Image (cartoon, helix red, strand yellow):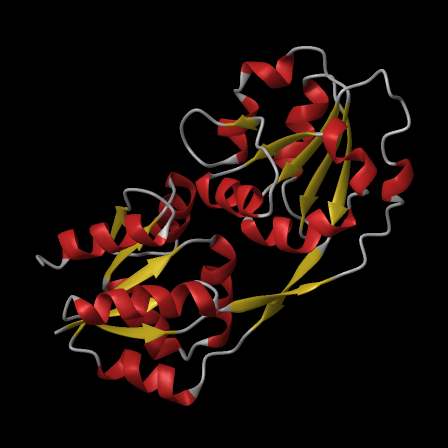
Length: 246
């Protein structure tokens, strides 16, 4: 039986693992990182000083909503436009009671969002909610469109090391399919896994959610890298079932 290596954060990996189990597939849950709140060092009460300018808050992930929305002053929420990267982020923001004004018509990357015509017209002041070092391309793209941009780094990644049971499960799998939703997870797996386990992953099929991750994994020497139908768990589940012939 093919074992499915899941490297998403724990909650998302466990959810997908349960769905795979219902389909008769066994999963190895190996999250490579978790998330924690951090102090963004921004005075949100004065983040948008010019009432004559458009006010834009860009949320780049569900975690950005989880850790960032609480910082926005309630008396300004009605004057702020909300933009999101991806459907999952939109769902998280809407579940918090906020309307999404701008989302990429297709795709789920920073580049896709920057193509939206609404961002090119009458630019103003933008806050991008992200993790440290993240979404530089998005910030630069908004600047090129004429926006004044600040990044509110409201959460941070905390690395996780694979445990002996996870390594043993990888090495004991007769057939393996690994699933990757970020380059960060790939880098951490390469860093922390024993060489034999990492080589086994590269020699087995992999499923990824973007061309960027696909290209990166192929550069590392992966033998076969397939693109998923989308970034969410339902998309990954359909792709896994297709690849395993279920």
